[in-house]
Image 1: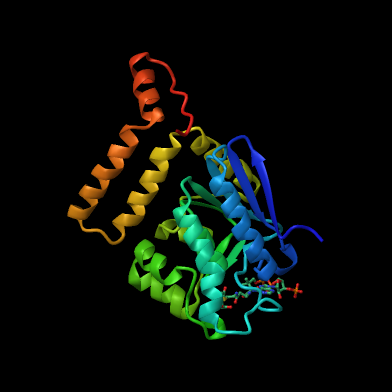
Image 2: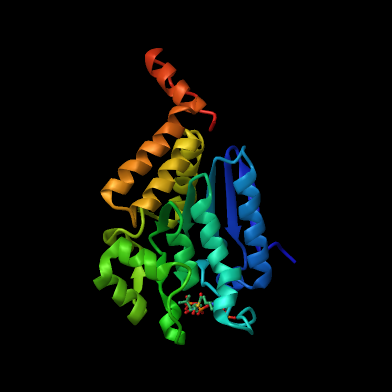
Length: 257
Ligand code: T3D
């Protein structure tokens, strides 16, 4: 039986592949366990300085497995032990996460992608908040992230009508960073992840925290947060290297410390 999540290290990048292509990489219980274990492993591994998540086959992920994996108990309890844990780990990960959306991303699968720091989508990809089609409310952070990304008018259309959003439209609405031909997706996403992996990882992690804090902070609170984070970044070895490289007119070699 193949692994439901593949993990491979390429230099400083961990490539995580959702691997149940026959069911568009929808998540069953085994896949949740594996995903959480993989995120813990790459989060703790200091040699990993960027994470890339993609799907195998023609889909990114169709969210919850509706055939065999849907929970028997309370859906709320299930969410707390599955999708919510995935979202929290992605958001708390002290390294950048790139989603390479290779095809349809539906329900919690769409929101898994949108919770990554960078979303690069293939031209053929699409995003569907499919929950409403089966009489559910959005989860996996979709009801929070979409109003922030696209405003309530478009968020309502996606969340209440279940409108399918093609990749190019998602780009125009500000949901994704780039749209590229499918043939170029792997190269583009891996290129970005590799570039991020050579950058000052601690400063990127702190910037990630600041971007997240900005969603709820006032400007006054954000200024305080920036000062706190800058104090930490200012003590990092990579900051020292960056300044030294500037003075010596050479390219900085960041170690992620
Ligand atoms: O448990 C809780 O706490 C609740 C949590 C919920 C979180 C959620 O994610 S709810 C939302 C769940 N996802 C969906 O409702 C999406 C269901 N899928 C679709 O609407 C469509 O498949 C797509 C729009 C994503 C793609 O359509 P299309 O026409 O490109 O593909 P298809 O033919 O529908 O699917 C291909 C195969 O994948 C098919 O299997 P088959 O007929 O070839 O044997 C289909 O049954 C299977 N598949 C697709 N999505 C799922 C799935 N199998 C199980 N679970 C799925 N979610």
